[in-house]
Length: 224
Image (cartoon, rainbow, N blue to C red):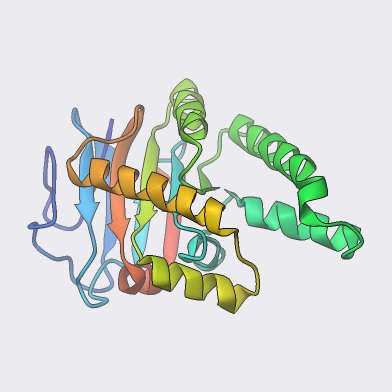
Protein backbone atom coordinates (compact mmCIF):
# COMPACT_ATOMS: atom_id res chain seq x y z
CA UNK A 1 0.00 0.00 0.00
CA UNK A 2 1.23 3.49 -0.77
CA UNK A 3 1.73 6.52 1.40
CA UNK A 4 1.71 10.21 0.67
CA UNK A 5 4.51 12.30 2.19
CA UNK A 6 5.61 15.93 2.11
CA UNK A 7 9.28 16.37 3.01
CA UNK A 8 9.03 14.99 6.56
CA UNK A 9 7.84 11.43 6.11
CA UNK A 10 4.89 10.48 8.28
CA UNK A 11 3.89 6.85 8.74
CA UNK A 12 0.43 5.64 9.67
CA UNK A 13 -2.39 8.16 9.55
CA UNK A 14 -1.57 11.83 8.95
CA UNK A 15 -4.52 14.05 9.83
CA UNK A 16 -5.17 17.82 9.77
CA UNK A 17 -2.84 18.68 12.66
CA UNK A 18 0.23 17.66 10.67
CA UNK A 19 2.84 20.33 9.80
CA UNK A 20 2.22 22.27 6.61
CA UNK A 21 4.36 21.67 3.56
CA UNK A 22 6.11 24.67 2.00
CA UNK A 23 4.78 25.98 -1.28
CA UNK A 24 6.47 24.46 -4.28
CA UNK A 25 7.04 21.09 -2.66
CA UNK A 26 6.09 17.78 -4.19
CA UNK A 27 4.20 14.99 -2.45
CA UNK A 28 5.50 11.51 -3.21
CA UNK A 29 3.97 8.06 -2.77
CA UNK A 30 5.92 5.04 -1.52
CA UNK A 31 5.28 1.69 0.20
CA UNK A 32 3.62 1.64 3.64
CA UNK A 33 1.59 -0.95 5.55
CA UNK A 34 -1.22 1.47 6.43
CA UNK A 35 -3.35 3.94 4.52
CA UNK A 36 -2.60 7.65 4.84
CA UNK A 37 -4.68 10.81 4.68
CA UNK A 38 -3.00 14.10 3.81
CA UNK A 39 -5.05 17.19 4.60
CA UNK A 40 -3.95 20.17 2.49
CA UNK A 41 -6.90 22.37 3.40
CA UNK A 42 -6.69 25.73 5.16
CA UNK A 43 -3.10 26.44 4.21
CA UNK A 44 -3.90 29.65 2.35
CA UNK A 45 -2.33 28.30 -0.82
CA UNK A 46 0.90 27.22 0.90
CA UNK A 47 0.51 23.61 -0.17
CA UNK A 48 2.41 21.39 -2.61
CA UNK A 49 2.47 22.36 -6.25
CA UNK A 50 2.89 18.75 -7.37
CA UNK A 51 1.80 15.22 -6.48
CA UNK A 52 3.77 12.22 -7.65
CA UNK A 53 2.52 8.63 -7.73
CA UNK A 54 3.90 5.23 -8.69
CA UNK A 55 3.84 4.27 -12.36
CA UNK A 56 0.86 1.89 -12.19
CA UNK A 57 -1.27 3.87 -9.74
CA UNK A 58 -4.77 5.22 -10.37
CA UNK A 59 -5.76 8.62 -8.96
CA UNK A 60 -9.48 9.28 -8.50
CA UNK A 61 -10.49 12.96 -8.39
CA UNK A 62 -13.83 13.41 -6.66
CA UNK A 63 -16.04 16.20 -5.32
CA UNK A 64 -19.28 18.05 -5.94
CA UNK A 65 -20.35 18.97 -9.48
CA UNK A 66 -18.81 22.38 -10.10
CA UNK A 67 -16.05 21.92 -7.51
CA UNK A 68 -13.32 22.15 -10.15
CA UNK A 69 -12.42 18.51 -10.86
CA UNK A 70 -12.21 18.87 -14.65
CA UNK A 71 -10.36 22.19 -14.38
CA UNK A 72 -7.79 20.64 -12.06
CA UNK A 73 -7.32 17.63 -14.31
CA UNK A 74 -6.84 19.71 -17.46
CA UNK A 75 -4.29 21.92 -15.74
CA UNK A 76 -2.28 19.45 -13.69
CA UNK A 77 -2.40 15.99 -15.26
CA UNK A 78 0.60 15.32 -17.49
CA UNK A 79 -0.25 11.74 -18.45
CA UNK A 80 -3.45 9.88 -19.34
CA UNK A 81 -6.69 11.13 -17.84
CA UNK A 82 -10.29 9.98 -18.24
CA UNK A 83 -12.91 12.65 -17.59
CA UNK A 84 -16.60 11.96 -18.16
CA UNK A 85 -17.00 15.67 -18.95
CA UNK A 86 -14.72 15.27 -21.99
CA UNK A 87 -16.86 12.37 -23.20
CA UNK A 88 -20.02 14.41 -22.81
CA UNK A 89 -18.47 17.36 -24.64
CA UNK A 90 -17.64 15.11 -27.62
CA UNK A 91 -21.21 13.82 -27.75
CA UNK A 92 -22.61 17.33 -27.39
CA UNK A 93 -20.61 18.30 -30.48
CA UNK A 94 -21.97 15.30 -32.38
CA UNK A 95 -25.59 16.08 -31.58
CA UNK A 96 -25.12 19.85 -32.04
CA UNK A 97 -28.05 20.56 -29.76
CA UNK A 98 -30.49 18.49 -31.80
CA UNK A 99 -31.23 16.17 -28.86
CA UNK A 100 -31.66 16.79 -25.14
CA UNK A 101 -28.83 15.34 -23.06
CA UNK A 102 -31.21 12.96 -21.26
CA UNK A 103 -31.74 11.09 -24.55
CA UNK A 104 -28.10 10.24 -25.16
CA UNK A 105 -26.87 10.18 -21.54
CA UNK A 106 -26.71 6.33 -21.52
CA UNK A 107 -24.50 6.42 -24.61
CA UNK A 108 -22.22 8.99 -22.97
CA UNK A 109 -21.84 6.78 -19.91
CA UNK A 110 -21.18 3.71 -22.03
CA UNK A 111 -18.51 5.55 -24.02
CA UNK A 112 -16.95 6.89 -20.83
CA UNK A 113 -16.63 3.50 -19.17
CA UNK A 114 -15.40 1.89 -22.38
CA UNK A 115 -12.66 4.52 -22.61
CA UNK A 116 -11.82 4.04 -18.94
CA UNK A 117 -11.52 0.28 -19.46
CA UNK A 118 -9.11 0.81 -22.36
CA UNK A 119 -7.02 3.25 -20.33
CA UNK A 120 -6.78 0.84 -17.40
CA UNK A 121 -5.63 -1.97 -19.66
CA UNK A 122 -2.74 0.17 -20.91
CA UNK A 123 -1.08 -0.18 -17.49
CA UNK A 124 -0.02 3.47 -17.41
CA UNK A 125 -0.64 5.77 -14.45
CA UNK A 126 -4.09 7.24 -14.79
CA UNK A 127 -6.21 10.09 -13.35
CA UNK A 128 -9.96 9.51 -13.36
CA UNK A 129 -12.86 11.90 -12.78
CA UNK A 130 -15.39 10.60 -10.24
CA UNK A 131 -18.62 12.30 -9.22
CA UNK A 132 -18.58 10.70 -5.76
CA UNK A 133 -21.91 8.87 -6.06
CA UNK A 134 -20.72 5.68 -7.76
CA UNK A 135 -18.93 3.65 -5.07
CA UNK A 136 -18.86 0.61 -7.37
CA UNK A 137 -16.64 2.55 -9.78
CA UNK A 138 -14.02 3.11 -7.08
CA UNK A 139 -14.15 -0.59 -6.17
CA UNK A 140 -13.66 -1.49 -9.83
CA UNK A 141 -10.72 0.90 -10.12
CA UNK A 142 -9.17 -0.53 -6.96
CA UNK A 143 -9.36 -4.07 -8.35
CA UNK A 144 -7.90 -3.03 -11.69
CA UNK A 145 -5.09 -1.05 -10.07
CA UNK A 146 -4.19 -3.98 -7.85
CA UNK A 147 -4.27 -6.36 -10.81
CA UNK A 148 -1.63 -4.33 -12.61
CA UNK A 149 0.50 -3.79 -9.51
CA UNK A 150 -0.68 -0.31 -8.51
CA UNK A 151 -2.86 1.36 -5.91
CA UNK A 152 -5.84 3.70 -6.01
CA UNK A 153 -5.39 7.14 -4.44
CA UNK A 154 -8.21 9.57 -3.75
CA UNK A 155 -8.06 13.34 -4.36
CA UNK A 156 -11.12 14.86 -2.73
CA UNK A 157 -12.05 18.48 -3.47
CA UNK A 158 -13.78 19.90 -0.42
CA UNK A 159 -15.69 23.04 -1.42
CA UNK A 160 -18.95 24.49 -0.11
CA UNK A 161 -22.19 23.79 -1.98
CA UNK A 162 -22.36 27.50 -2.81
CA UNK A 163 -18.92 27.42 -4.39
CA UNK A 164 -19.86 24.33 -6.40
CA UNK A 165 -23.09 25.92 -7.63
CA UNK A 166 -21.15 29.01 -8.67
CA UNK A 167 -18.75 26.76 -10.55
CA UNK A 168 -21.69 25.23 -12.41
CA UNK A 169 -22.94 28.69 -13.36
CA UNK A 170 -19.50 29.71 -14.59
CA UNK A 171 -19.26 26.70 -16.89
CA UNK A 172 -22.83 27.26 -18.07
CA UNK A 173 -23.95 23.77 -17.18
CA UNK A 174 -25.58 22.52 -14.02
CA UNK A 175 -27.30 19.51 -12.56
CA UNK A 176 -30.83 19.26 -11.22
CA UNK A 177 -31.62 20.03 -7.59
CA UNK A 178 -32.31 16.34 -7.00
CA UNK A 179 -29.03 15.26 -8.56
CA UNK A 180 -27.06 17.92 -6.70
CA UNK A 181 -28.62 16.87 -3.39
CA UNK A 182 -27.67 13.26 -4.12
CA UNK A 183 -24.10 14.27 -4.97
CA UNK A 184 -23.94 16.47 -1.88
CA UNK A 185 -24.97 13.63 0.41
CA UNK A 186 -22.54 11.15 -1.15
CA UNK A 187 -19.59 13.53 -1.05
CA UNK A 188 -20.36 14.56 2.55
CA UNK A 189 -20.40 10.92 3.66
CA UNK A 190 -17.15 10.23 1.83
CA UNK A 191 -15.50 13.31 3.34
CA UNK A 192 -16.52 12.38 6.87
CA UNK A 193 -15.23 8.86 6.34
CA UNK A 194 -11.88 10.06 4.99
CA UNK A 195 -11.47 12.56 7.84
CA UNK A 196 -11.83 9.63 10.25
CA UNK A 197 -9.13 7.79 8.34
CA UNK A 198 -11.63 5.26 7.01
CA UNK A 199 -10.79 5.13 3.31
CA UNK A 200 -12.85 3.40 0.62
CA UNK A 201 -12.03 -0.27 0.09
CA UNK A 202 -8.80 -0.70 -1.87
CA UNK A 203 -7.75 2.94 -1.50
CA UNK A 204 -4.14 3.39 -0.40
CA UNK A 205 -4.20 7.11 0.41
CA UNK A 206 -6.36 10.21 0.25
CA UNK A 207 -5.51 13.88 -0.25
CA UNK A 208 -8.00 16.52 0.89
CA UNK A 209 -7.97 19.77 -1.10
CA UNK A 210 -9.86 23.00 -0.61
CA UNK A 211 -10.13 25.55 -3.43
CA UNK A 212 -6.83 27.26 -2.52
CA UNK A 213 -4.94 23.96 -2.47
CA UNK A 214 -6.48 22.91 -5.78
CA UNK A 215 -5.60 26.25 -7.37
CA UNK A 216 -1.87 25.95 -6.57
CA UNK A 217 -1.63 22.30 -7.64
CA UNK A 218 0.12 22.36 -11.00
CA UNK A 219 1.35 18.81 -11.56
CA UNK A 220 0.01 15.29 -11.04
CA UNK A 221 2.55 12.86 -12.38
CA UNK A 222 3.49 9.18 -12.29
CA UNK A 223 6.74 7.25 -12.31
CA UNK A 224 9.05 5.13 -10.21
